Amino acid sequence: MTTHTKQDAVRLLDVFDPEMAGLLHREERRQFETIGLIASENVVSPMAACLEGSVFTNKNTEGYAGKRFVGGCELADQAEQLAVKRVKQAFGVDHANIQCGNATIANIAVLRALLKPGDTFLGLALDNGGHLSHGAKFHYSGATYHALHYGVSRETERIDMDQVRQMAREHHPKLICVGSSSYPRLIDYKAFREICDEVGAYFWVDCAHDCGLIAGGAIPSPVPYAHVLTFSTQKTLRGPRGCGVILVCRDMEIPDGVTKDGAPKFTKLSTKIDRSVFPRLQGGPKGDMLAARGVLFYELLQPEFKEYARQVCRNAKALARGCAGEGMRLITGGTDTHMVMIDVTPLGVNGQEAETLLNRVGMVTNKNMIPFDPLPPSCGSGLRIGSPTMTTRGAKEEEMEHIGHLLGRALKGREDPAALERIAAEVKGLATSHPMFSGEWVSPCIREQFEAMYGLPGRD
Image 1: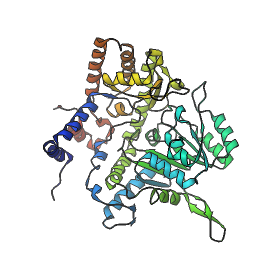
Image 2: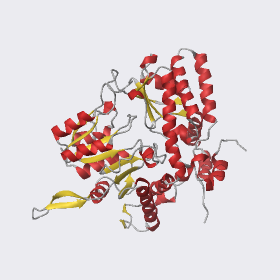
Image 3: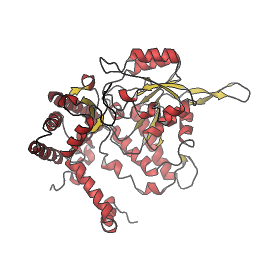
Image 4: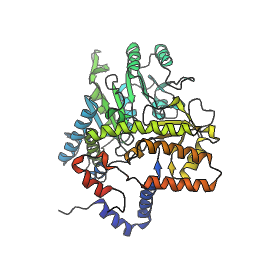
């Protein structure tokens, strides 16, 4: 049997469709020559990425392992079961569903499993750092359910637990969600669970952003307190995109209507979750992505990933120091995770202006609203930046703090083309001094071969 690598296919693409191939090569160069600071981005390892688009993608895998609706799934079943076993071990949970196409689909599946249309649930307000799938009015979650939102304190910019408790007691939600897309601090999961227990609510944690830090033991885990977790795999988890995961922390029987005789009916939480994903939301998952997730979850179990997670947090703190040193205001006063939220208006720009300018000099960021932002979402007062990508590429604290200073220097020198040109050259030099994936994050048993294959371009 002849096997072909992705490199073989790209060589064919260069001839067959040079226009698309050119975009691919340009994107490869862009990523290598720029400093990626978007908190929701990372670089997937080649070990997991090699399974994306592999022969597993040819297989219809509708259903669950052992209960498919088509034949020929024996090996696909084993791949999914292996991935499920590994992620359960990595997080210490009873059940895992890894079939969702992304984290928002996973979030909708949780809502459909635990709520009826019109039921009340609480989530963090979008403009205070929450996610649109936590009940934004324009989103399915807000249009289908009665979503109410708690926020952060004006004084501390941290979640206002007194408000959460007051709203829970007043509205008796059936579910309370915690999680965010732009909140850089640890969350008091124990306090949230106590409030849930007081009002009889399910506790759902959306840890899409910091799940890798949790798996790596760099920050406290919500598993002892939550009923369910959801997350995507491409952020701090450092995995493929297009993947959503639902974890059932401790499986149990939950109310599920009544029987024909009117007696209370109970169903396992894991069963409710699985049925909500398939067949109620999705058809067959992508088999190649199930396999890729399996390799990712194996990486989570290695000691190198534990150190990576700790380094992500150290690097974020260093990045924050550099930004603060240039006069930007740190939202909440700092960070406990991979993310740094900064108010750039003290430097005379808004978020959109800052994003555009920084992109010009090779520093890739994204504009973001800050709590109680006086500016509209189209520009915002802040930037959301993070350390995962550059940590994957091998940067350490000294470089990350310097990157924070470079960011501030660029914004301050926005009217000085010569200064911006010098900063752009320095940014490119710093970026290209690192491979796309540092060999320090792979197992010693393959490190030498890995670095020979994936080290800096042009090295001997």
